Length: 398
Image (spheres, rainbow, N blue to C red):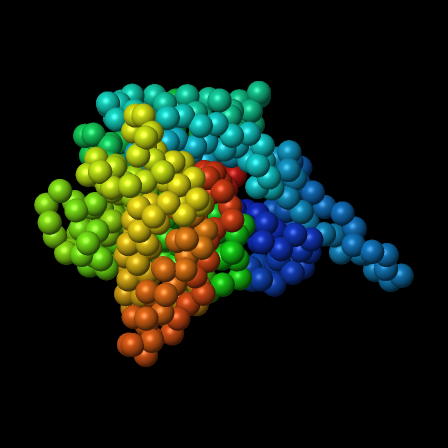
């Protein structure tokens, strides 16, 4: 049967994925896994070796017959770039063909930046991590905040960037850099990093809570990242959430309410805003004498020094997150929940009340309590996940 060039590219892409997942796999093992004739697999892998994408080497010495060869990725086969951004920061990272990080860049988004200005900053971040030989760049992945249409390459909407609505993103970047560009929601990009490199490896059913300017959840079921029918899976930030402390109501909203959106209680942005309200109301705090506005690094330092006001606000945020974890756990029954984003810097000050609240709700409902942990992948995890997205979506040109 003669295959089309598109079919050949898809098969070769699948070969690369298998080698990526199982370094040292043989051609015979690939043929069995993909149910393709060994001679055909041999033809495809030989071409991938000749083009510099794969390396092969003999595995041991055999007295009889030809020894099998072990296939591995060639780190020099090309490079991929991942970009991850939210309301205030753009992170970019370049990786080699074996997913090893090479270079990274950071840009700051100003509140006054237009959509066009943000796209220019994304382009600049990509430019900063380009390989010296631009021809070695194979593809770009972008983790986009809020709602995203990955099929059409459009950023649909994000509440915390001015006029960020129905922004064509993939096509302009592809024209600018001359390679395929793939979009994904930024929290799902963080989940991809955990799935392929972090604590989600080998776990079939788990959640990644991405907590930054907003809050979203990457849902992995059966080992696969879930998108939903309209790419809205995991959009929990706008859930109406109860406040665990009525005395803290005035910290979180100027209009008294015992229910707010989850991201208006427990995001990094909401915690900073609550602390500012407390300072302005005359609440005692280590930050009372600070000149200018508070940022999240101030929150972390004050919390670690057990500042009463800061710890109180973090506890309310943590209990709101625990409530959300419990509700999702009752619906999806994950074995693991990974928290990602700047709040992980708070350590047990966040985790202890979060776990306690989740366990309280789940045990009362006879639910299973998942293991709740903080990500250890750092602030570039979303960029690494976006780069890995590009790695896995890219196909050799045929």
